[in-house]
Amino acid sequence: MNPSIFIILLTTLILGTMLVITSSHWLLAWIGFEMNMMAFIPIMMKTPSPRATEASTKYLLTQATASALLMMAIIINLMYSGQWTITKLFNPTASTLMTVALAIKLGLAPFHFWVPEVTQGIPLTTGLILLTWQKLAPLSILYQISPSINLYLMLIMSLLSILIGGWGGLNQTQLRKIMAYSSIAHMGWMTTILPYSPTLMLLNLLIYITMTFTMFMLFIQNSTTTTLSLAQTWNKTPIITTLTMLTLLSMGGLPPLSGFMPKWMIIQELTKNDLLIMPTFMAITALLNLYFYMRLTYSTALTLFPSTNNMKMKWQFYPTKRATLLPTAIVISTMLLPLTPMLSILL
Image (cartoon, rainbow, N blue to C red):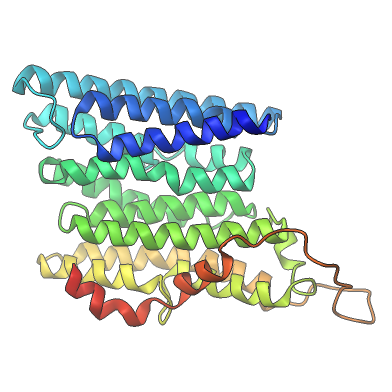
Protein backbone atom coordinates (compact mmCIF):
# COMPACT_ATOMS: atom_id res chain seq x y z
CA MET A 1 0.00 0.00 0.00
CA ASN A 2 1.14 3.53 -0.82
CA PRO A 3 2.50 5.13 2.42
CA SER A 4 0.61 8.40 1.90
CA ILE A 5 -2.69 6.50 1.45
CA PHE A 6 -1.91 4.46 4.57
CA ILE A 7 -1.30 7.66 6.59
CA ILE A 8 -4.61 9.15 5.33
CA LEU A 9 -6.46 5.96 6.35
CA LEU A 10 -4.83 5.91 9.80
CA THR A 11 -5.68 9.60 10.32
CA THR A 12 -9.32 8.95 9.34
CA LEU A 13 -9.42 5.95 11.71
CA ILE A 14 -8.14 8.09 14.61
CA LEU A 15 -10.43 11.03 13.73
CA GLY A 16 -13.48 8.72 13.56
CA THR A 17 -12.82 7.38 17.05
CA MET A 18 -12.09 10.84 18.46
CA LEU A 19 -15.34 12.13 16.94
CA VAL A 20 -17.32 9.37 18.72
CA ILE A 21 -15.53 10.00 22.04
CA THR A 22 -15.94 13.79 22.01
CA SER A 23 -19.43 14.25 20.52
CA SER A 24 -22.62 14.65 22.54
CA HIS A 25 -24.86 14.43 19.44
CA TRP A 26 -26.03 11.01 18.20
CA LEU A 27 -25.62 11.81 14.49
CA LEU A 28 -22.00 12.91 14.91
CA ALA A 29 -21.23 9.79 16.96
CA TRP A 30 -22.79 7.59 14.26
CA ILE A 31 -20.77 9.35 11.52
CA GLY A 32 -17.64 8.77 13.64
CA PHE A 33 -18.39 5.02 13.76
CA GLU A 34 -18.82 4.93 9.98
CA MET A 35 -15.57 6.87 9.35
CA ASN A 36 -13.76 4.48 11.66
CA MET A 37 -15.14 1.37 9.93
CA MET A 38 -14.55 2.62 6.37
CA ALA A 39 -10.94 3.56 7.17
CA PHE A 40 -10.17 0.29 8.98
CA ILE A 41 -11.30 -2.10 6.23
CA PRO A 42 -8.58 -1.04 3.70
CA ILE A 43 -5.99 -1.20 6.54
CA MET A 44 -7.06 -4.83 7.13
CA MET A 45 -6.36 -5.58 3.46
CA LYS A 46 -2.97 -3.83 3.47
CA THR A 47 -1.28 -7.15 2.57
CA PRO A 48 -3.73 -8.63 0.02
CA SER A 49 -4.60 -12.32 0.52
CA PRO A 50 -7.80 -14.41 0.40
CA ARG A 51 -7.80 -14.66 4.22
CA ALA A 52 -7.53 -10.86 4.61
CA THR A 53 -10.38 -10.40 2.11
CA GLU A 54 -12.54 -12.89 4.01
CA ALA A 55 -11.73 -11.21 7.36
CA SER A 56 -12.53 -7.76 5.92
CA THR A 57 -15.87 -8.99 4.51
CA LYS A 58 -16.87 -10.53 7.86
CA TYR A 59 -15.87 -7.33 9.66
CA LEU A 60 -17.83 -5.15 7.20
CA LEU A 61 -21.01 -7.24 7.52
CA THR A 62 -21.02 -7.35 11.34
CA GLN A 63 -20.13 -3.66 11.77
CA ALA A 64 -22.68 -2.55 9.13
CA THR A 65 -25.40 -4.59 10.91
CA ALA A 66 -24.43 -3.00 14.23
CA SER A 67 -24.46 0.50 12.67
CA ALA A 68 -27.93 -0.08 11.20
CA LEU A 69 -29.24 -1.27 14.59
CA LEU A 70 -27.64 1.73 16.28
CA MET A 71 -29.26 4.16 13.83
CA MET A 72 -32.63 2.46 14.37
CA ALA A 73 -32.23 2.86 18.16
CA ILE A 74 -31.23 6.54 17.72
CA ILE A 75 -34.35 7.23 15.57
CA ILE A 76 -36.67 5.44 18.07
CA ASN A 77 -35.18 7.54 20.88
CA LEU A 78 -35.59 10.69 18.74
CA MET A 79 -39.27 9.87 18.12
CA TYR A 80 -39.98 9.46 21.83
CA SER A 81 -37.82 12.24 23.29
CA GLY A 82 -37.41 14.74 20.42
CA GLN A 83 -33.67 15.30 20.98
CA TRP A 84 -30.30 13.96 19.81
CA THR A 85 -28.33 14.17 23.07
CA ILE A 86 -26.40 10.96 23.83
CA THR A 87 -26.86 11.01 27.61
CA LYS A 88 -30.66 11.44 27.40
CA LEU A 89 -31.79 7.92 26.56
CA PHE A 90 -35.30 7.43 27.99
CA ASN A 91 -36.97 4.80 25.82
CA PRO A 92 -36.37 1.16 26.98
CA THR A 93 -36.65 -0.25 23.42
CA ALA A 94 -34.02 2.21 22.16
CA SER A 95 -31.81 1.40 25.15
CA THR A 96 -32.00 -2.37 24.51
CA LEU A 97 -31.36 -2.00 20.77
CA MET A 98 -28.42 0.32 21.44
CA THR A 99 -26.88 -2.10 23.95
CA VAL A 100 -27.15 -4.95 21.42
CA ALA A 101 -25.66 -2.81 18.61
CA LEU A 102 -22.67 -1.78 20.76
CA ALA A 103 -22.25 -5.40 21.96
CA ILE A 104 -21.95 -6.49 18.30
CA LYS A 105 -19.36 -3.77 17.69
CA LEU A 106 -17.38 -4.85 20.76
CA GLY A 107 -17.69 -8.58 20.09
CA LEU A 108 -19.52 -9.47 23.32
CA ALA A 109 -21.13 -12.92 23.51
CA PRO A 110 -23.45 -14.08 21.94
CA PHE A 111 -22.28 -11.76 19.11
CA HIS A 112 -18.63 -12.78 19.45
CA PHE A 113 -18.25 -15.17 16.49
CA TRP A 114 -16.61 -12.63 14.18
CA VAL A 115 -13.79 -11.62 16.57
CA PRO A 116 -11.53 -14.77 16.45
CA GLU A 117 -12.12 -15.27 12.71
CA VAL A 118 -11.33 -11.66 11.76
CA THR A 119 -8.29 -11.47 14.07
CA GLN A 120 -6.91 -14.71 12.62
CA GLY A 121 -7.18 -13.47 9.03
CA ILE A 122 -5.20 -10.22 9.45
CA PRO A 123 -1.54 -9.41 10.29
CA LEU A 124 -0.39 -8.93 13.90
CA THR A 125 -0.15 -5.12 13.68
CA THR A 126 -3.71 -4.81 12.32
CA GLY A 127 -4.90 -7.35 14.92
CA LEU A 128 -3.43 -5.09 17.59
CA ILE A 129 -5.48 -2.12 16.31
CA LEU A 130 -8.63 -4.29 16.13
CA LEU A 131 -8.33 -5.54 19.72
CA THR A 132 -7.31 -2.23 21.32
CA TRP A 133 -8.13 1.01 19.44
CA GLN A 134 -11.38 -0.30 17.93
CA LYS A 135 -12.81 -0.94 21.43
CA LEU A 136 -12.55 2.73 22.46
CA ALA A 137 -15.49 4.16 20.47
CA PRO A 138 -18.21 1.61 21.51
CA LEU A 139 -17.04 1.66 25.15
CA SER A 140 -17.11 5.49 25.24
CA ILE A 141 -20.77 5.43 24.13
CA LEU A 142 -21.60 2.70 26.67
CA TYR A 143 -19.88 4.84 29.33
CA GLN A 144 -22.12 7.80 28.47
CA ILE A 145 -25.38 5.81 28.42
CA SER A 146 -24.48 3.57 31.42
CA PRO A 147 -27.24 4.96 33.74
CA SER A 148 -29.99 3.97 31.28
CA ILE A 149 -28.63 0.60 30.12
CA ASN A 150 -30.83 -2.51 30.53
CA LEU A 151 -28.96 -3.99 33.52
CA TYR A 152 -29.99 -7.65 33.19
CA LEU A 153 -29.28 -7.81 29.44
CA MET A 154 -25.85 -6.24 30.02
CA LEU A 155 -24.94 -8.64 32.85
CA ILE A 156 -26.10 -11.74 30.94
CA MET A 157 -23.99 -10.74 27.91
CA SER A 158 -21.01 -9.92 30.14
CA LEU A 159 -21.07 -13.22 32.05
CA LEU A 160 -21.51 -15.15 28.78
CA SER A 161 -18.50 -13.29 27.34
CA ILE A 162 -16.30 -14.19 30.33
CA LEU A 163 -17.36 -17.84 30.03
CA ILE A 164 -16.98 -18.09 26.24
CA GLY A 165 -13.74 -16.07 26.27
CA GLY A 166 -12.23 -18.69 28.59
CA TRP A 167 -13.85 -21.71 26.98
CA GLY A 168 -13.10 -20.80 23.37
CA GLY A 169 -9.37 -20.29 23.93
CA LEU A 170 -8.77 -23.66 25.59
CA ASN A 171 -8.18 -25.68 22.44
CA GLN A 172 -6.40 -23.04 20.33
CA THR A 173 -2.84 -23.13 19.01
CA GLN A 174 -3.05 -19.90 16.98
CA LEU A 175 -1.87 -16.94 19.06
CA ARG A 176 -4.12 -14.42 17.33
CA LYS A 177 -7.23 -16.51 18.11
CA ILE A 178 -6.08 -16.89 21.73
CA MET A 179 -5.70 -13.11 21.97
CA ALA A 180 -9.17 -12.66 20.43
CA TYR A 181 -10.80 -14.96 23.01
CA SER A 182 -8.82 -13.19 25.71
CA SER A 183 -10.24 -9.89 24.42
CA ILE A 184 -13.82 -11.26 24.59
CA ALA A 185 -13.27 -12.28 28.23
CA HIS A 186 -11.74 -8.90 29.16
CA MET A 187 -14.66 -7.08 27.49
CA GLY A 188 -16.96 -9.22 29.66
CA TRP A 189 -15.19 -8.03 32.82
CA MET A 190 -15.41 -4.39 31.67
CA THR A 191 -19.11 -4.45 30.78
CA THR A 192 -19.98 -6.28 34.04
CA ILE A 193 -18.68 -3.39 36.15
CA LEU A 194 -19.94 -0.67 33.76
CA PRO A 195 -23.43 -0.18 35.37
CA TYR A 196 -21.93 -0.08 38.89
CA SER A 197 -18.69 1.90 38.44
CA PRO A 198 -17.99 3.35 34.95
CA THR A 199 -14.63 4.84 36.04
CA LEU A 200 -13.44 1.37 37.10
CA MET A 201 -14.33 0.17 33.60
CA LEU A 202 -12.01 2.88 32.20
CA LEU A 203 -9.16 1.75 34.48
CA ASN A 204 -9.69 -1.86 33.35
CA LEU A 205 -9.69 -0.70 29.71
CA LEU A 206 -6.37 1.15 30.11
CA ILE A 207 -4.67 -1.85 31.73
CA TYR A 208 -6.18 -4.25 29.14
CA ILE A 209 -4.94 -2.04 26.25
CA THR A 210 -1.43 -1.86 27.77
CA MET A 211 -1.22 -5.64 28.30
CA THR A 212 -2.57 -6.45 24.83
CA PHE A 213 -0.19 -3.92 23.23
CA THR A 214 2.76 -5.49 25.11
CA MET A 215 1.74 -9.01 24.09
CA PHE A 216 1.34 -8.14 20.40
CA MET A 217 4.63 -6.21 20.35
CA LEU A 218 6.40 -9.27 21.80
CA PHE A 219 4.79 -11.49 19.13
CA ILE A 220 5.81 -9.01 16.40
CA GLN A 221 9.34 -8.87 17.81
CA ASN A 222 9.63 -12.67 17.56
CA SER A 223 7.49 -13.02 14.36
CA THR A 224 5.38 -15.66 16.10
CA THR A 225 1.78 -16.54 15.27
CA THR A 226 1.50 -20.11 16.66
CA THR A 227 2.29 -21.86 19.94
CA LEU A 228 4.92 -23.95 18.15
CA SER A 229 6.85 -20.91 16.85
CA LEU A 230 6.59 -19.35 20.32
CA ALA A 231 8.21 -22.49 21.78
CA GLN A 232 11.25 -21.97 19.51
CA THR A 233 12.10 -18.50 20.82
CA TRP A 234 13.92 -19.50 24.03
CA ASN A 235 17.33 -19.97 22.36
CA LYS A 236 17.00 -16.83 20.19
CA THR A 237 15.77 -14.26 22.71
CA PRO A 238 15.79 -15.65 26.26
CA ILE A 239 15.07 -12.30 27.96
CA ILE A 240 12.10 -11.52 25.69
CA THR A 241 10.84 -15.09 26.31
CA THR A 242 10.89 -14.49 30.09
CA LEU A 243 9.10 -11.15 29.66
CA THR A 244 6.48 -12.86 27.47
CA MET A 245 5.86 -15.34 30.30
CA LEU A 246 5.40 -12.52 32.85
CA THR A 247 3.03 -10.58 30.57
CA LEU A 248 0.93 -13.71 29.91
CA LEU A 249 0.62 -14.36 33.65
CA SER A 250 -0.36 -10.72 34.15
CA MET A 251 -3.11 -11.08 31.51
CA GLY A 252 -4.36 -14.12 33.43
CA GLY A 253 -4.73 -11.90 36.51
CA LEU A 254 -2.15 -13.47 38.80
CA PRO A 255 -0.85 -11.42 41.76
CA PRO A 256 1.57 -9.61 42.19
CA LEU A 257 1.26 -8.51 38.52
CA SER A 258 -0.74 -5.59 37.08
CA GLY A 259 -3.51 -7.79 35.64
CA PHE A 260 -4.62 -8.74 39.14
CA MET A 261 -5.52 -5.13 40.03
CA PRO A 262 -8.65 -4.61 37.84
CA LYS A 263 -10.00 -8.08 38.69
CA TRP A 264 -9.50 -7.45 42.41
CA MET A 265 -11.14 -4.01 42.26
CA ILE A 266 -14.08 -5.26 40.16
CA ILE A 267 -14.78 -8.16 42.53
CA GLN A 268 -14.52 -5.74 45.49
CA GLU A 269 -16.95 -3.27 43.86
CA LEU A 270 -19.48 -6.02 43.05
CA THR A 271 -19.40 -7.35 46.62
CA LYS A 272 -19.99 -3.78 47.89
CA ASN A 273 -23.19 -3.84 45.79
CA ASP A 274 -24.35 -7.01 47.64
CA LEU A 275 -23.60 -9.29 44.70
CA LEU A 276 -21.92 -12.54 45.75
CA ILE A 277 -22.78 -15.26 43.21
CA MET A 278 -21.78 -13.15 40.19
CA PRO A 279 -18.19 -12.28 41.27
CA THR A 280 -17.72 -15.91 42.41
CA PHE A 281 -18.80 -17.14 38.95
CA MET A 282 -16.52 -14.57 37.28
CA ALA A 283 -13.51 -15.61 39.39
CA ILE A 284 -14.11 -19.31 38.61
CA THR A 285 -14.49 -18.72 34.85
CA ALA A 286 -11.33 -16.54 34.90
CA LEU A 287 -9.50 -19.80 35.73
CA LEU A 288 -10.29 -21.00 32.18
CA ASN A 289 -8.38 -17.99 30.82
CA LEU A 290 -5.58 -18.59 33.28
CA TYR A 291 -5.33 -22.19 32.04
CA PHE A 292 -4.59 -21.26 28.43
CA TYR A 293 -2.20 -18.48 29.50
CA MET A 294 -0.40 -21.04 31.67
CA ARG A 295 -0.26 -23.42 28.69
CA LEU A 296 1.35 -20.69 26.58
CA THR A 297 3.72 -19.89 29.45
CA TYR A 298 4.68 -23.56 29.71
CA SER A 299 5.41 -23.93 25.98
CA THR A 300 7.25 -20.57 25.88
CA ALA A 301 9.52 -20.45 28.88
CA LEU A 302 9.36 -23.70 30.84
CA THR A 303 10.28 -26.20 28.11
CA LEU A 304 13.46 -26.55 26.06
CA PHE A 305 12.72 -27.11 22.40
CA PRO A 306 14.78 -30.00 20.92
CA SER A 307 17.96 -28.59 19.37
CA THR A 308 20.72 -30.32 17.36
CA ASN A 309 23.24 -27.58 18.20
CA ASN A 310 26.10 -28.23 20.59
CA MET A 311 25.60 -24.65 21.66
CA LYS A 312 22.12 -24.06 23.07
CA MET A 313 22.11 -20.37 22.09
CA LYS A 314 21.66 -19.43 18.42
CA TRP A 315 24.10 -17.13 16.66
CA GLN A 316 22.82 -13.58 17.21
CA PHE A 317 22.68 -10.94 14.52
CA TYR A 318 21.95 -7.33 15.31
CA PRO A 319 18.13 -7.04 15.69
CA THR A 320 16.49 -5.20 12.81
CA LYS A 321 13.04 -4.76 14.41
CA ARG A 322 12.48 -1.71 16.57
CA ALA A 323 10.93 -2.49 19.94
CA THR A 324 8.59 0.53 19.99
CA LEU A 325 7.73 1.47 23.60
CA LEU A 326 8.25 -2.18 24.60
CA PRO A 327 10.25 -1.62 27.85
CA THR A 328 7.72 0.96 29.12
CA ALA A 329 4.76 -1.24 28.16
CA ILE A 330 6.27 -4.30 29.90
CA VAL A 331 6.85 -2.32 33.12
CA ILE A 332 3.23 -1.02 33.11
CA SER A 333 1.87 -4.49 32.23
CA THR A 334 3.61 -6.20 35.14
CA MET A 335 4.41 -3.75 37.95
CA LEU A 336 1.32 -1.57 38.58
CA LEU A 337 -0.13 -3.51 41.53
CA PRO A 338 1.55 -1.38 44.29
CA LEU A 339 -0.37 1.66 42.92
CA THR A 340 -3.74 0.03 43.74
CA PRO A 341 -4.42 2.04 46.98
CA MET A 342 -3.82 5.34 45.15
CA LEU A 343 -6.07 4.34 42.22
CA SER A 344 -8.83 3.11 44.55
CA ILE A 345 -8.84 6.53 46.26
CA LEU A 346 -9.10 8.26 42.85
CA LEU A 347 -12.00 6.02 41.84
